[in-house]
Image (cartoon, rainbow, N blue to C red; front, top):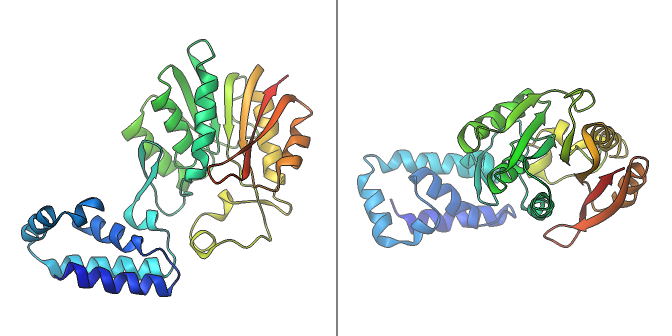
Length: 282
């Protein structure tokens, strides 16, 4: 198997489809069972190839995955893994792919948790794969984290990740509107579906990721309003809500929060766009 020729041809095909050529390396490394960086280690690569009894099968698997990527299926669905902060989360059809843009949100929550007496109770509304909940549970040891998710498909991946990464995270399947009656917590993280129904999305997202986790109603604010109401119900007085939204929704989110919250602050993500808001429960 000529690795260089295989990668060269694959990268050319990806470029024609306006997809990052690096994805070819990720896919080949995946089928070989090595890291992407190991592809560039001649000795290790040769050892790996020598141990393979049938390289034709590996090549067929790679070409099959490449075809799916060219069809804009998310890379993370193809490899089954999505990196987030220090974690490697398992993902697949039915759950959103974690975005690195959310990492600064986690930093802010962790900084706030340090100022609270332990143990700190955290509820993640719309937990999806568990990226936010698991990052907090693993990086702030004195926390009690509950991950709430409605979708059975997403719950599958959430439970899978919890079982491997942090078994002390409690998974609750239910609608945020009425979940956890009588429970109060110190921090709520909310990642609601917030994209307006009519907004166009990239093919990788619109064609494969779950629409129920993306679209928030005609204006995009219909579901975030429900999440904010739930957070107000779940938070103790002086508890903190951190909620994600589109870069255009900051003012609408602040208006909705003003009924029950104070110290409403808009924050930028890693790309410098205003993408999440923090607020303190009155």
